[in-house]
Image (cartoon, rainbow, N blue to C red; front, side, top):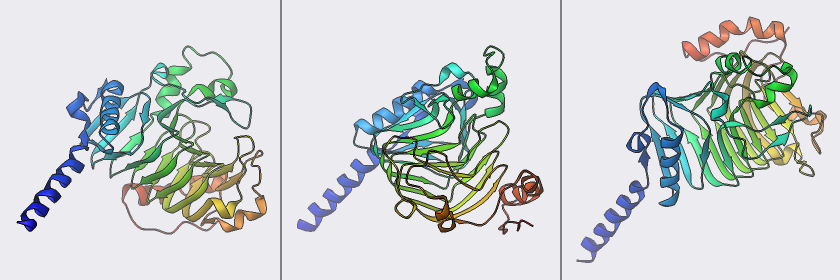
Length: 310
């Protein structure tokens, strides 16, 4: 009798756990690449959060969206063949935590943002595409400011701000309209087996680590139109030594620098750059030479070693 009751308890517990997982199509999301799904996907995220957390599944299809806000204990899981596509209408994006970057430009809009959250994640064999070049084309039709000013209005692909317990794993991030991924003032961040292909517009930095602690980057590949990996402390008084910030490995090909310590990097010492296991050095010429390697690695999925800079 006790065994039967135990089995029933475990069964009910398992059903409870899986009941928290949701599919975005059940909330009205349509994967046709044309329907704007911001509200439907956000409803799925909110429902998952309110039920205690779990996975928000993206099935196969192309789901167009504006800003999405990750909540506590929610993991976005993009299945194979699933594609989250950023809207090319700049008005579909929100800036929930504005800030000024190192050059004095007001930024902060994003496709996906987690703000003051805990235990959040993005994973799966799918991809997130910001359509950066197309968004820029649409923006400059009406925004007549100099490019050095208007770029800040374009959305990052991913922003993680003041979060604890972040996992970004197995996902492909591509063609951001500005910075690709920015992790700010966060703790316990794991970035693993992530592929970044972000070229086509200016300021396509790959991974930005801004005043974070306990960040692990493992087995990642970055093709960047700007800097591949940037350390900074844009948040006032939030400088963090490198040895408390990052452990891991990175394979990167960048149009600017592989590892850059921003001008306002607080306690970060450029001499500590040798601690970062980046296996390449960047230059515009070398970036062009590595396009062939990019094709082999990301399209043909061949395991290759980075080229050695002359």
